Length: 386
Ligand SMILES: Nc1ncnc2c1ncn2[C@@H]1O[C@H](COP(=O)(O)OP(=O)(O)OP(=O)(O)O)[C@@H](O)[C@H]1O
Image: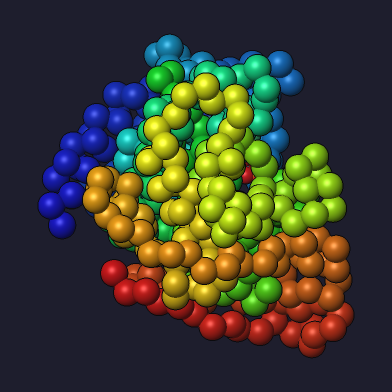
């Protein structure tokens, strides 16, 4: 792969960045342990002993702290709660893979720390935090003008295409949502939390937290209902996110729907009635009408109920780049399987983990609730090929 020589260069450079990392004895595949590991003590000092003042927030995997390394670099340290049952070797193997996943629209993973019961991931720090802090906050959404929003939509598409088609191994994110898009100083988007599902094989803890961490509204119906994972489950979530970025509204927001269907149905009904542009965020004083209409149509295409009708990220990128691409007419958006997931957890199959092989095929095991057999079952796989 032409990608490897430049990648190797990046890894060599990273040695300088990871000051305070453990000295390495072994070198394999262009990695030394020095590239990979941070000392627990270094991170303790960097984060002021994981002080509450340094805590940036807490996600489904545990708390995240801001840290300052001895070389002056700011980092975000994700302290994984003791939910990962993965052994140290498997964990570090996964981290090694994730260190090779590098793209300007992905948050850079700098390394990890595994000492005693502690497992942590160390990322570059992004001062503007996540997209939801801008999009859904009244006095901040105005700083996202149309051209910035369009850049964010295209940047996320570029990052997802890389994960699906260009990374050393295909990565299906599974948790694309506004809070997993971080913004750099210029408000360029970077996808975070990619590959985390790989670090928690056979562990249902995080997937259960979908119900409480705000991911409902982004989950593709076939994933929510049957545990079927494919690149198209990410495409669905991306479509929801595009509609949120254009409209400034959350998909499932009680203020918006007030018991009525969410953003997808709202957008669909507007487009059916020929009023597509009524969806646009009223806080946008000016916007490019053609781009905005195209983004809404694209968002609806990505959210179609029929998995096969959804475009892949390659087509999405072509649509976004081209002036003259005629988009297909979208079919009806998928129903939110997550509503059922939220309300009837006990009788609903819960995704408990997955394994990917090198062709990108994903097998997801689903443990069932009371309406189903208690045994784990394997569910189907959609392999799109690469
Ligand atoms: N690299 C980073 N730079 C700056 N802030 C970050 C970084 N990574 C995470 N954060 C912030 O830390 C908080 C927790 O992030 P985390 O990704 O763990 O949770 P989440 O995305 O809110 O939820 P979930 O785990 O369900 O995806 C968020 O407010 C996020 O903006």
